[in-house]
Length: 117
Image 1 (cartoon, helix red, strand yellow):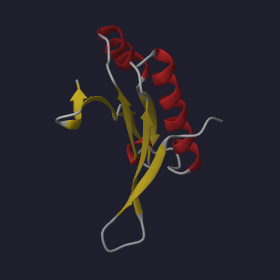
Image 2: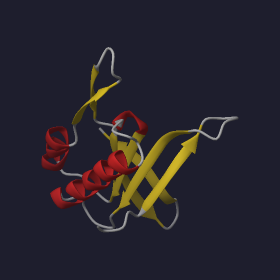
Image 3: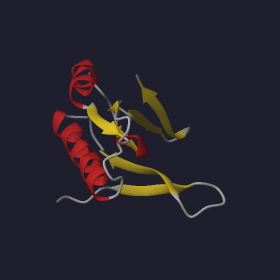
């Protein structure tokens, strides 16, 4: 397996219980379909290894210099995971908690980050 750029988790305040896992993939160039496939591979791995099948515990961020309209459409097609929660009753759920972040850098203003919808 490739290595994730950033993998972290968040605790519930006052407890030693993890509430969320976070996967962040950084790319210096424009986003490609391969970039999306790569981060989704990491999301699926975290789901299996840490989140016990509960995708709701995972947040994902893909940070690139640009996102084309084709890539945004592709995200809507492949960045969805359907899963079940609980036992009695079983609850069907859908995950699509991946955010695209566009970065720009200017010598005067420094680094700026903006979410792409």
